[in-house]
Image (cartoon, rainbow over all chains, first blue to last red; front, side, top):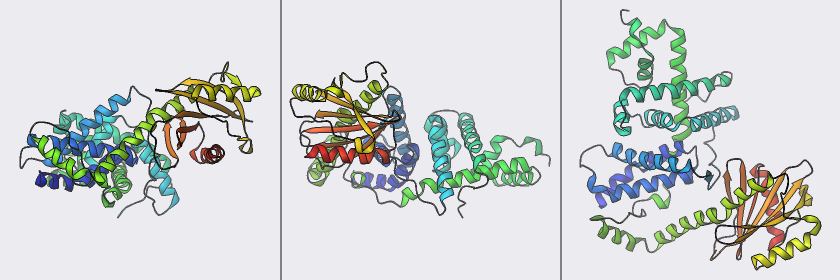
Length: 168
Length: 252
């Protein structure tokens, strides 16, 4: 178990990053999700085939927990335990505004589009990997990705004059 | 050139995501030079991707919170894992168990205090006919009645200094106890509510906690055996001085 647990540990920062993006910076909700994911992974470690893709396995577990949670929350008023943590400060105030708008726009995406977008951009997963993870055809992954980006791009236009912070 | 017409939207995404083979990648790159609209689109997609990284990559550098560190996870008990789980529990008894309890405390307060307070706020502040059961004109009768029903002394803090007048109050069933709600209104008609109920076994640090439920913001805190929640559809920054004033007055 120790060995397996240590392997899981390596993925914690990435799981947290993805979860934080799903919950728009709300670190409590995000870490709750990561914790549930780690617990479940530990509990099911004997289902994991050695030398197969641990990252994909972990992200799949987390995705399933997330989907269930979102589904449950559709029926109850959405209370969040804490104000989202302030988003990372950027060098200029207008950048912060634009990034905050982007963060909001990501949050407003339908869940299936948001998931695909974040797995591809943040995690750099291949379309094939994402398709396997979500158990949908690769074409579906691509069309969700395209729709997500089109939507976010439409929101960019307001910031043409003050573009988002460009990262080297 | 012969591929020109074959370049699709999907190719543009795959180009941005680095998922084309080298040959195709070069073709798309060449094609973009002569198609400024598509090139702009690709540049925007790339900008979006970089911005998403800017937003969330800092998480990678954050220290992992204690509850997520190896050894602090509570595995669910099942089959083979069970013995290992008990071992983990053994290790957890010290600091780990404390972390788990601290984690459970928060949802209980949310469930029994913040959530019902926010809901009651929405229900009664929007009621034009009977927002309160007893009017502030009969404040003493209201206080006596609520104190009697909650079996503890309840009071309505004075928030006039912030422009909020007491409208009145009512008795409510909460999740497992009675609760009282006081309603206040500003001169321009903004309503806030203070929700009070007993909280069993609350032994937590006297800090304000914040929750939001759609547009309703709630600050809540514990004072002795009572839990208080102040709710409003106003900014947290505006709610905080009201909560602080209420907390100060009620603590005396």
